[in-house]
Length: 639
Image 1 (spheres, one colour):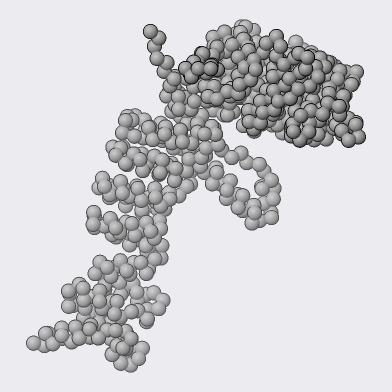
Image 2 (cartoon, rainbow, N blue to C red):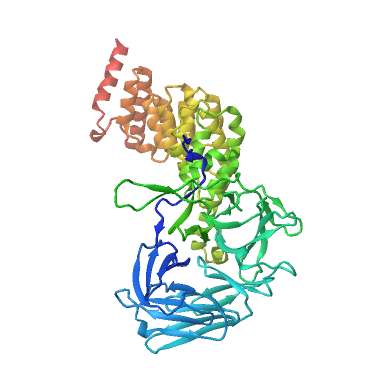
């Protein structure tokens, strides 16, 4: 009996709902347009039947045309209104479609040239770039005038080309693959960039080159065999206009054989057919060696190679028995397209390759490296918060504290950079002199973990952790180290933990050196905890004093029965002559201390004499009951 498969040990999987199409056969050919991610199943016979299935917009098309010969390449325009078909080396047909998505073959336009056409790419709804052995030319079909208008051209010797639809980035090969010329193809525009010269004997073929975007930068990835017969991938980045492609990264594969690449969420996935495994490389994760001379970073796989998670495909059946077959992974029939597409033409399936981030969390044991990796993933935030929660929970050992401290510093360094960029952007909007600063592009991190995330996603959940206090203080010190003020919720949680564990001295030190973000609400929260320790009340009053919150201080003193102290402070404030007598007399009577009441009463009588020449209170001051109380006290003293 077979053992159950543990899917937690796979960090790659195929999308659960593949695009299904008619498989390759003697009568059916399959083509794929990676720009629109459309699969064309072309069935030949008396007439050519074509079924188009799209992974992007789920818009499927079906039509028939007269069989005019073998098709080499077929692609729709951006809006699916014009179909381009190449049948031989020197010509391309352009067929308009009507409102019912059917071809108007009688209105077809044909480009017939003398040069060998290697392929074509659409750059606009009505503009297509043809790449031949003589260069690149952009045409615009005009069906009303029955002409193909040449818009732009570039003459250059070409022996093969590659294209990245993500950024309309093309690469032309000359001189047997030793000279590679990057181009940006846009409507009516061909931008030639500085070429990459590989040197004599260092040429490459088109099958060894992959074009992609890595972290927003166009990249040329070249598979190369080393002297020891093992392979590596050289990554050249195009860092800006006018700059030649720079050798920036080297991915060490450590094996030989057949390789193919995908880019999954900026992770370079290298598939090895002989071992049926895949390797992951992330050029953004630090710690790489540097190649002498070039300065290129040398990367090893971030985790040992593993196979893709097995995939069971449902087999169509007239019965409802739910039969499935296990797909042959890393099949010789697999063809890979960028960024993360796998097509098995014999099986009739198209998948996306996906990262299983939760599985990676269990497989990457280096927590700091794992955090670096998750910070760069599009969907990494929730997974990263789970990792942080696990690291700081009751299950961790105290030896993890230095690692947790390093993780906090990495999170807060990124957090601080985002805060600084936001501040610079605000200043640039206010000040015209900051125009140069505002024109500077800043890379926005994929994942930012701020204080609110840490509070709601980690600290508020691990309140039972024995090490919570140490972890909170580690995080607080990391914030301070990076010049970030702790917010109210975090400050409250730190205070709660310190008071709960009777670490009043530590709390006093944090307040003394203004480590916590002082505010009136925080001071009032401190006051609410004053029953735990008498000194907490004074800490709160000191904070209010630093915040010049005199009114709150007076209210607190009156509530605590310290009426004389409240009067002492009130006399020094603006508007001392308009103090509400009733409020202070009421607080004094509640103390049950005749001496305190005498002092307060005499203070207001003296104020009345000074302001009005009479000790009597005015009617609207509503002090009659306290005048009677005073007279009763005097009478008792006389007795």
